[in-house]
Length: 362
Ligand code: F6R
Ligand code: MG
Ligand code: MG
Image (cartoon, rainbow, N blue to C red; front, side, top):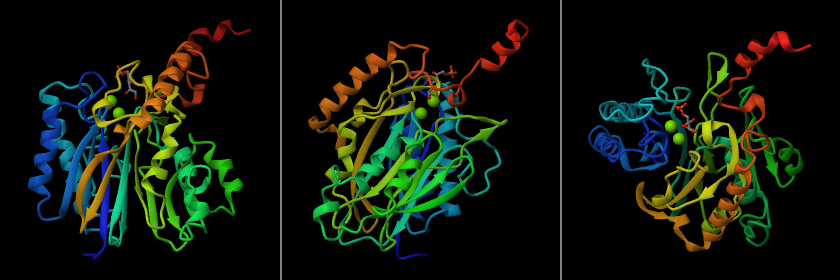
């Protein structure tokens, strides 16, 4: 067992209430009970929440990353929630638990996970972002701004502890290979990749001394029957302050909503709306995509919080802007660039329609 703290955030959609909009309170209660009972010997603390139809489990412990015990606990929790979902006939009950044969690590089994292990500092502020109706690439633009853009993060310019920059570990979702860029020196090389968030996603960010500061729930694409399924609805952990970006610098990119993929049928571009926990209920055209930010202070692994950081009225204008973008882009209906390009849609009728019409193409 390590003296370090591990912060693990798991997420899964194991049944929607109603449709794909939210999670039934009984399921959240079941998650709470399971973690209390089965986690009492291995967890330091936990927090259960949801954004849209995804249950999010925030766990602290000393078992390190990829711990079999912790992953099994998360898996069992989602399974117990699935049982409740089945009883209440929730929509898509158990949909993210892809296999019955759980092997001890949740990666590739359906649920998403972001985790990091570190020596807790004298004061350890963390922000946990959780999104619904979008994909892991949604974090590329904000992570670039937080850790590499001086127009967002003034600390890069005027804080001597941050002036040397950060390193970004980027995953190629197709090839399942990672590459690390040292910034600001390699910014322009890195942006060639980060600008294509459908394929290349930021997995981790490190200080120049190798300390982890951000981790996303980025995994290899779910290839099922040769086809990409699931938009993953990602989570992201960011450690803040005292040589790392300030909480306000970490939240600032979301003041100007960017377009992400997901939304209805995982097949559309839409604005990512920063919302408070109470507004994490995506219903319009099954969206638009949204993100919440919960802030915690760690105290020997205890999760002191959360603070609902996007409840700040200073994000109201971002919300209004996002709604205007949503009105505009919805007018395009089934046309790109609202609808995704053919090869990126989660749903498609194209092969069937093509087959039916094949003799009519001259
Ligand atoms: C998006 C999402 C929903 C569903 C849509 C159709 O990520 O989950 O938009 O894709 O409600 O769902 P089905 O095919 O289950 O009726
Ligand atoms: Mg769902
Ligand atoms: Mg979801």
